[in-house]
Amino acid sequence: MRLTAYFMPTLKETPSEAQIVSHRLMLRAGMVRQASAGIYSWLPLGMRVLKNIERIVREEQNLAGAQEVLMPTIQSADLWRQSGRYDAYGPEMLRITDRHGREMLYGPTNEELITEIFRNSVKSYRDLPKLLYHIQWKFRDEVRPRFGVMRGREFLMKDNYSFDLDFAGAKRSYNKMFVSYLRTFARLGLKAIPMAAESGPIGGDLSHEFIILADTGESAVYCHRDFIDFDVLGQTIDYESDLEPIVSHWTKLYARTDDKHDPEVFDKQVPADKQVSRRGIEVGHIFYFGTKYSEPMGAVVSTAEGQPVPVHMGSYGIGVSRLAGAIIEASHDQNGIIWPDSVAPFHVGLINLKAADTGCAKMCDELYGKLRAAGVEVLFDDRDERPGTKFADMDLIGLPWQLVVGPRGLEKGVVEVKHRRGGERQELSVESALARISA
Ligand code: 5CA
Image (cartoon, rainbow, N blue to C red; front, side, top):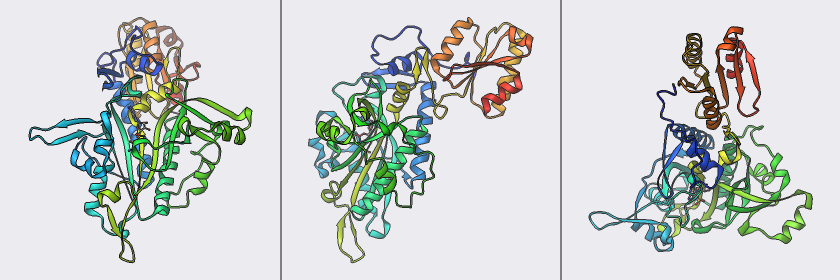
């Protein structure tokens, strides 16, 4: 993509409404714009990041054996009356009346709708287990929408729902999602720690929040320092095997959010030099809630003995749009964003230091063509701007690599390659530069 043709409205000034670094950088890099309080439009650069996050979440859900569906954003109030949550949900729910006077709502979550789909089609234990997910916008009329996409009113969530015959089956589904989440967040370049948490309006008594440590996080969290060195991507996971050993490895040390924190137990279980008490961002939340929805809504299957029993359910959420902000909170410097390779909107930024110079223009066109032919996503700064502006914008948007072409380098037969994360620069021949970037 040529920057002269691209829609990337960057801002030089720091927007005054943004209190945290990710919000400031997302606005400055032209990733999002606020439409109204807590509601955002995603511009091309932000959209690429959002799609990359979505792709990784989807790949990992599929790998764990979940199947993708798509439920609507608008739901019927009647369905929510069946579970008893229509009144219980309170002012966070956006309630709508259609032209026929029917009460509708913009879904804040989908337990009721998926339970209805399930109960109408599945009647036997033989059809279990099932794990169904979608990636869809949600609306919650938050009292205090803030921090940009981190606490929005409209936000993109991956929500998965599991259906099993009994607790043992439901725990297997829970474990699949637990491990899948560890992998998902690691692939997004994040260190997410599963912490015992309250289940709130979703309900149930087994629940973990996946938290990344960050000073700007909204929750106070407490955990054992050893979590920081745990790794999950080093092993191949067989989702049909017993995942309990992995889950217990990740749950045996103390890790709790504020609601579940017990200072006495913390002191007893964690030596003082291993105690981490920080703030954290909740990027995912998983729940087992048994028959909370299946019983009132009649989602019943027959057992092998022909007995009707309500299914055991769980739900598993990932804040897809929140993650764009959370990744920036975890990965930036004073000059801007530093994208992990896996979600970067482009892999390389190609900078022409002197657009008016025919040699530079020719070399840039050649590099641009070669990179694109090799399938490398490249953003080509072909604008007629000062080098300082180009460097600043490229650092701001945080692509993993910068490839800089200038008249002085060309005389020596070299171009400059800069790695955004480490900051190291190398002068290399064109061939070596291309090889370096593609490695
Ligand atoms: N139905 C369950 C799980 S599928 C559920 O709704 N869980 S949740 O309430 O914990 O939300 C799941 C994830 O969505 C959270 O972990 C968080 O990452 C994200 N999320 C929740 N509220 C917001 C919000 N206001 N803005 C952005 N992301 C949010």
